[in-house]
Length: 116
Image (cartoon, rainbow, N blue to C red; front, side, top):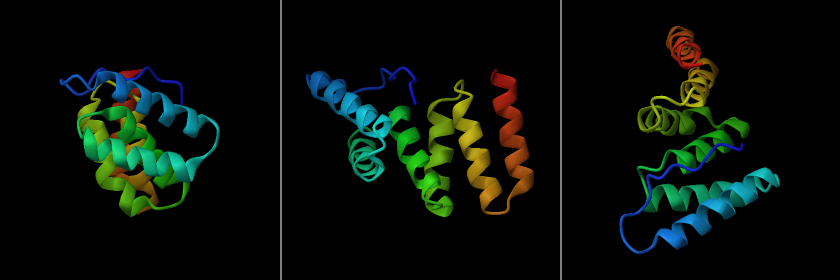
């Protein structure tokens, strides 16, 4: 996961801390430390609910663990937060397909193809 971190960050003077948290999250994810990355993603998503990157990482980790029903609300939120990111509707489609919503999954995959 090497996407650019969104600037949907805190508006206060805590931007440096936010950047450090995001860099640590990316490092944990890329190193395969998924449990730690999942915990940090949950914390960051709670602190900065409008940040699509932490939301995407959190959803990806839940999907990797087969926790699709938990992933769904996060995947929907991520798709709303990042409407021009083709990865968001793809991840949403994967979660929808896993819980048996194949029609909705196809529609989500179609949105992703339209963004490429």
